[in-house]
Length: 225
Image 1 (cartoon, helix red, strand yellow):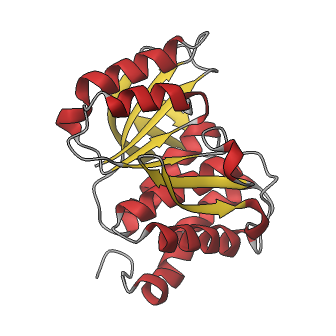
Image 2 (image 1 turned 90 degrees about the horizontal axis):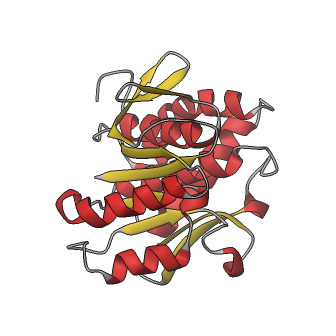
């Protein structure tokens, strides 16, 4: 399982858990609809596009309103109570959830039967370089996607897009370093001819079809292998 967790300040909603799906310009979790080109919705949408290409299960998602940190606490509480039964192979934390102390408390509680790969942004590992996304297990940094290697890294939403790709590529079973390289390549290929983050997101499935056969040896054309 790949599990993406987000506490979203602009929403007023109860905690929601479910698998992601695309529906027009939205990415949905249960009855919740999020814009697929903004914030946490962009992260989920990109991860879903990558897992769809590789014919993997859609990402599972936990999302809550982060009113004065309450949503973050709700999500960590949910993880503490359910992580052992979910046993995610890849755990993704969005922005306000990138709290080292909270995560260490969760990890040390022993709720994970195996230690998942953790994917997060600069807020989690700000002291470890100028990166958009990092992947590590326990306290060991395994790979990162650095801003210097990403075209248009200054665009709002670029961090979410790169994290979404890195987490989904890691979930395919690629080595973390390889997943980081492919995440950067995918973003750059999509950004070559467009300027906006929404257009980059739209092109990611196209880039996957055009390149992943050569890069990863996984070749799909439309719906046929």
